[in-house]
Length: 251
Image 1 (cartoon, helix red, strand yellow):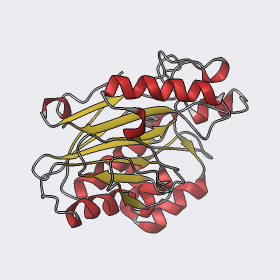
Image 2 (tube, rainbow, N blue to C red):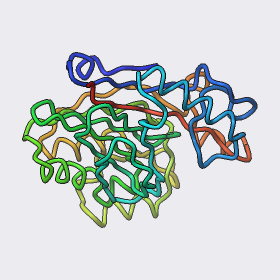
Image 3 (cartoon, rainbow, N blue to C red):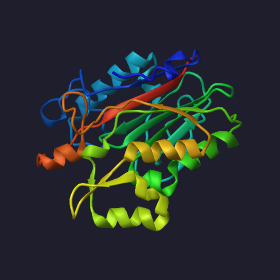
Image 4 (cartoon, rainbow, N blue to C red):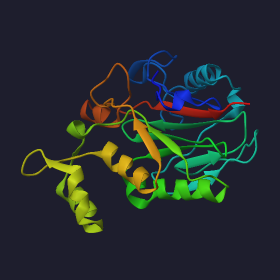
């Protein structure tokens, strides 16, 4: 488990960036796989989510997850026992007693807290969502809910620049949006580039005047700690697990 030192100092909120350690899953999902979209045994995923809920001090029914699609869509959770399916890549709430979760396997999990207005949120920030505005949309959503100008964000473990190989088309896509995006890339060889997802997400948050810290861990390299889509693909695994990051408002 990993924690933001700064986010941990706030009294009204709890959070955790869970690693893959612990849990009930086996095989390629070994550990705390919380990916409901994986092909892991359903019973194991339920047990893992129950474990997460207990660690966060909430009932499993109050742990809200998303159906993530790499979009820029943000939804508000308004009820403590909502059975609504949240098809989005960010969720926010001001309901005390709720925990919001995001699952990742190389993408950047972002946990948010507005201390003044007591609003929390979480973002699934893969390159697609970050590129298409998921971060800006989430901050604007919080402000429309009555949020203040003082929002804190913590970026959790994700794939590092050294591990994130991309092709020329990927590179061109970002440069076509802004020539300034060149700073997020470095050359691996004549064909491949490396992309700094963490820095890209960090800068999008700073553009919204958000205070930010981050946990500098590489999900691709740290097999014992994290699931990784790219590592699983490289090893020719049929599927991959997902780690979970959670933030909750304390009653």
